[in-house]
Image 1: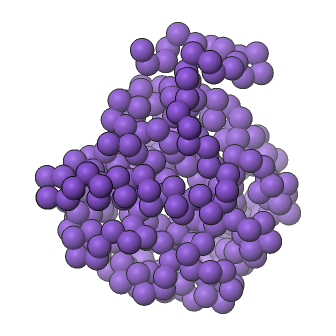
Image 2 (image 1 turned 180 degrees about the vertical axis):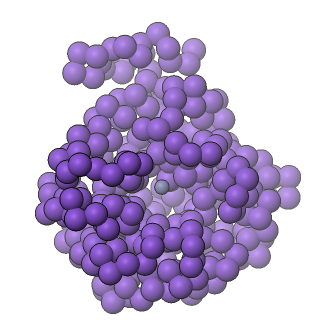
Image 3 (image 1 turned 90 degrees about the vertical axis):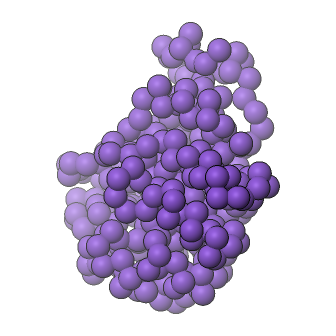
Length: 286
Ligand SMILES: [Zn+2]
């Protein structure tokens, strides 16, 4: 089983996770830019974060045989903080960089006017930079948030196949399927969507434009949920080609629209040091 985890926040995970992910078949990931956890004191803290996603985290993943890409954006939660919004003016500098495969994650958290303003501006930026968009849907008011999301996407003029609407479940899957956007599902350990429910959705709706991720971060989450969903698919009678389509070919097709994916295997013995820092050497998998 080869796996592309299209939504995982590796900055908040350990090297043990990288080793376990590699052993389970993960060979590539996309890490969306998200919130800090605590309030940022200024927009400048985004620049170090974005540079870290593009440099250090990409290097760290490579040492474990995993190709790392990222998406860059002002996330919905921090769009509500006036200290953060000036980052919107600096995003174009980052969206031009090679490791950035989409604008994201954007969208709604609490459905505020500030969130909508940042979302609309970033849909414009995606058009200007010819990049796909990763859209977060709120965990509360999910149907209303998804409906408004799809209205704004339609109004932006972006082709729906350039947009991935994430964190879906049984109540939002039809709305997004009808829109023509890609459908993202985050599989969590004990809340929201799990792998058994995911398999039922795949059985009912088919595999077209379906994308599964772990959305693992610093909260209770599991970076192996992609692999566990693949196993649940097999147990339910899906074939290897079906599993490969959902866990590899679909996310590759979506992010491949950036023309920036790097997917050739990594020879971990050949990985370079990062600005002279080789602290991880000797800890990579055998
Ligand atoms: Zn996320």
